[in-house]
Image (cartoon, rainbow, N blue to C red; front, side, top):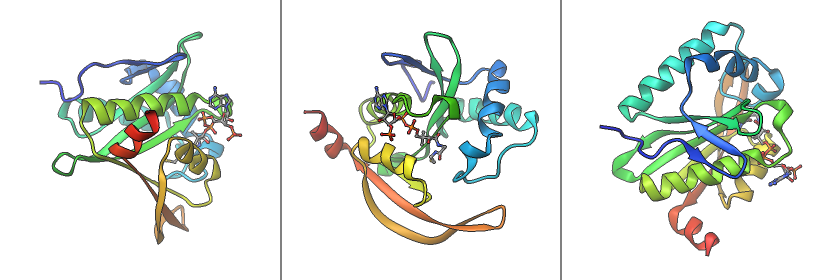
Length: 186
Ligand SMILES: CC(C)(COP(=O)(O)OP(=O)(O)OC[C@H]1O[C@@H](n2cnc3c(N)ncnc32)[C@H](O)[C@@H]1OP(=O)(O)O)[C@@H](O)C(=O)NCCC(=O)NCCS
């Protein structure tokens, strides 16, 4: 049984697809970049083995329905430029958390907005979610702008929730309900 039907997802410029083993080099390049990892929940990766392990773990999670992580491939040159994820899926409450990252060179062109519109549509329409949430560092302005552009509302602040490499940081919690999303699309 497939928990995540109808993949890959296509948008105007992008293909959102499960990772392949040969994505490891591109994935490592993204997650070893301190600019991308500044507000991430782990320090920058230091070994390509971390990319191999992450890809294997993501593929197992996809098979078991645990989480949906899709690589973002730019169609015009085939480059893997990022990832977007629905994780911590709680089927009974019809909710999931969303995460995302883009290679630094791909920032500022609307790629993530385009990718997340497709991921949210998939989550609300195919997976029948009612709520998608995001937990970001309140200092992560680019991420906050991405969420606001998609219609997410800032719902609260959880203090000192993370410790990454010895640095303590807060969580800004954003939420988008299915009805907000449907209303915005009308
Ligand atoms: C969060 C992150 C994905 C945002 O990247 P981004 O490039 O700003 O987001 P988008 O791809 O949606 O692009 C939006 C930007 O492109 C511009 N843009 C250009 N063409 C566009 C288009 N066709 N459509 C929409 N926006 C477009 C927008 O104006 C906006 O720029 P602005 O914020 O300066 O106004 C990126 O900063 C990142 O990967 N950060 C590191 C990882 C991270 O922190 N993730 C979040 C934690 S979960």
